[in-house]
Image (cartoon, rainbow, N blue to C red; front, side):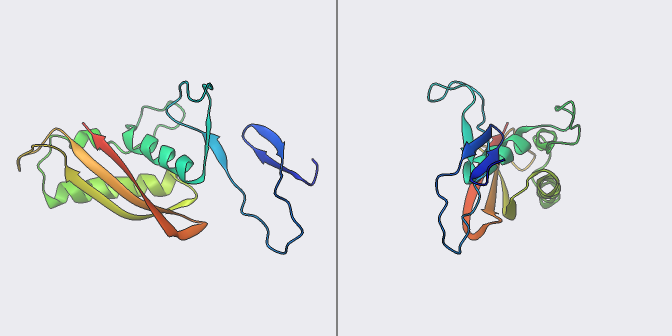
Length: 153
């Protein structure tokens, strides 16, 4: 492999930003953009860094355990909490489920905060929607935080 090439999931491509400075550039990691579909004329568009992490987190939160054939433990099982009482115990269980799955399947990011609240009109006996928001930072830039939110219904 040539010295001036980088490798990503699409193969090799020349690196155009190589300079003789003492600082080495931060490598950019590419992955598939989700959801798959026609975007900018391509079915398989790519995403990188923050967008890649956001897509991976959304996919993790919206997947139930057992849905992925080769990764049966991938996911968070959040739908099982939809009609549970909205108390501290339920919210703590949801947060623990998210933290455990995040640490097992999301690489390159640090989870800073998890927020779970009822979404829409719901009484204390349970509801049919939850809003989950995660505050996350990239491991390469801990000062740059961003949020990822999903609604479970």
